[in-house]
Amino acid sequence: MLVFIVLTASNCGGLVIGWNRSGDLRAWWPYELAGESAISFAYAALYAAIMRGTDLPILSFSLIYNSLLAVVLLLHAALFYGAIPLVDYQAVIRSDAAVFGTYGMFLIGAGIAALLGKRRPK
Image (cartoon, rainbow, N blue to C red; front, top):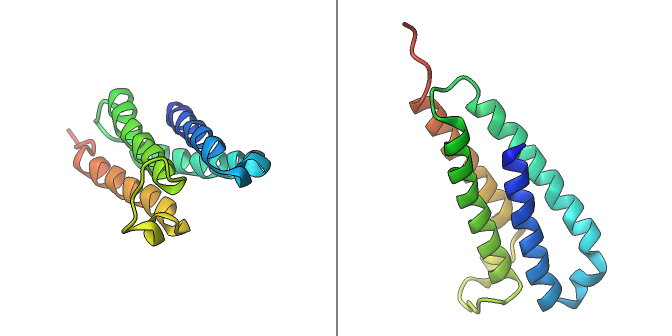
């Protein structure tokens, strides 16, 4: 639940940036929020499944790790809507694969952390 809350806060921040920078988003924001929330919920469920059974300090690790993901997503929104001008990589930033790739890379990172923090038999 904590992961979903952190990511939803980031999604709302991205929507605020988009609201101020894009006329299209003003009409589509409920659909955008619903889509981003569904993606965040799916990520949170997969993250919880991956991290189950590890010896990592789950609460602190999850808060820090997923706050980093939230910052990356917020930075992506700022770049996507032009709040931070970046000319060279617009095709990559505007690609749908950028967001899904970001979530995927963080899931892979969580999987690696879970493997390294796996409970050892006593």
